[in-house]
Image 1 (tube, rainbow, N blue to C red):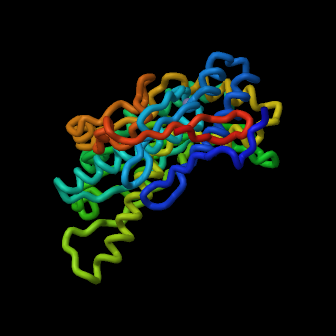
Image 2: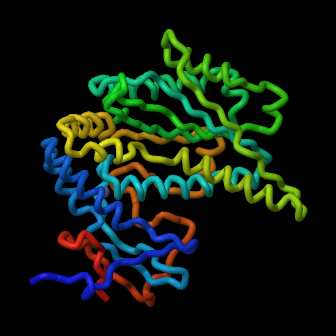
Image 3: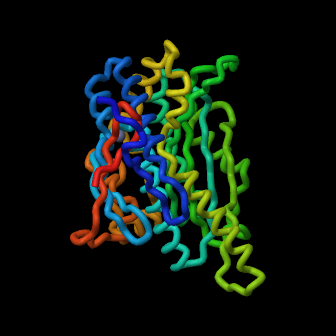
Length: 338
Ligand SMILES: [Zn+2]
């Protein structure tokens, strides 16, 4: 029997801001990634990934659908799980940053700490080395004096430009969101070159690693009409920094873009080995304390809840209408059954 698209209802999950949530795109990418895992000889994970998010059960709420039940595979490189995890980290970070801002006057700094590109065979040990280097870095006196809280995430990109000299190499780097007191800008200020010098010392390398520093625009507490526009802009700038820092951890484009390449199985094995069961995000100082206080869950464990993104909202779901969407392998669409 063939199914015509006209005969079925396709999932449309629109957020409160009017944006279609990218379920179909993510599931499509996950199916491709599962194929890549299969080619890499990682059959178990390929199978888990292929069934990731096959069935989605939503509560129908006034403001749209809320995911109520689904099975996610938790494989580090799964595009579906990466999307869910990044959303959840961003959501937790937003709550943490908001509460921190409520409690004391803070300024936020967005730091990117890098290391020279490495070959695949060096990736795992390079990541371990970076983790240790971060611990040295945050222990330095001037860092300790300036930083009252931090969030650190790891991102890995891969050079996929065939003509580039460093084609195929990996670029692991840290995105760090740092909270400082406003007085940081007048007492104990750390310049870009000083951040870079300290990161070089922590990394124990003989070159200056590329280090970006960006001060997130300040939010104001006092508001008049003229200031509201600026305030909105600055809130957006803070949101952007939070999203940037919450990315987790590999763009699937870096693997899937050259899906047909002979390198793909090796790339998959390299990244899978380097990231397997590894904790890639960490909190410190007041951000760690607030995360604990808010009771925010662990996003990286094997049993991480990737269904409920916003833990501050709890659906009372008994009486609520439900909608079930199934992934249709032939149509490559989520199909609704009521
Ligand atoms: Zn998954």
